[in-house]
Image (cartoon, rainbow, N blue to C red; front, side):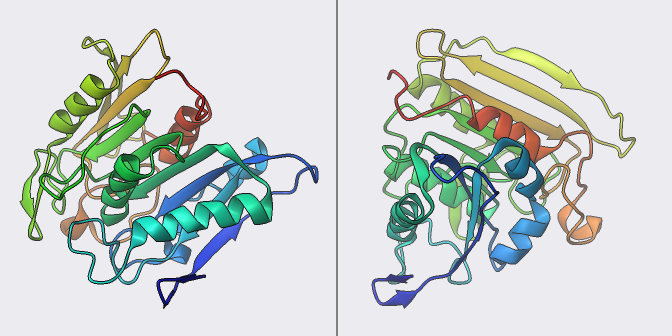
Length: 267
């Protein structure tokens, strides 16, 4: 696909289904310096897509996702916008059930898309990422949002702050922003997931609900978790990225969250 003179690539997985069946679309964004193939390996939605019948697309960045104010000539928001149109037209995807998720740099890009393509995306999920402060865009329209972040993440600190020349909200602060935007109840339903995998991690899940619209904001705090995809593989040693929890399957949790939403919710 050509976007502003730049050749852009993506990998797509389409499960077998009836010819005229409109399937949901999950766009899965890899981290910085990673690849679409690597994202399929790290966050493998394909078995769930076969069972639940949805399309999975892993786009490729130009080394990194240009999710900040300085795009360096690479407009990744435009790329994802055009990609959504292409998948809807070519593969009969359902335009009311388009979802985006991502890890790290891909998670920050997902947050930017939630700000700027919220009339095309029904729900978002960010892993090991929050939202940039002062980059010229911000939350503007209610949209269901889910976050997963490790308290021992050495790359993107759970408590936020400055990293790689950017300034990011903490997980708690960004969830507060979403709760306010979506007019959710400020009291969370809290669930604790113990360390059944015996890997030194546990999880606290906080759910905030707007009872009138059904919109939720969900935060998973991975205690002792690193810069990793829950339930995924340990793609780098623990001393570099921290621990991968196996007390949670992020793909299952994210899809379970996504499938409850369409674009036509009240807001």
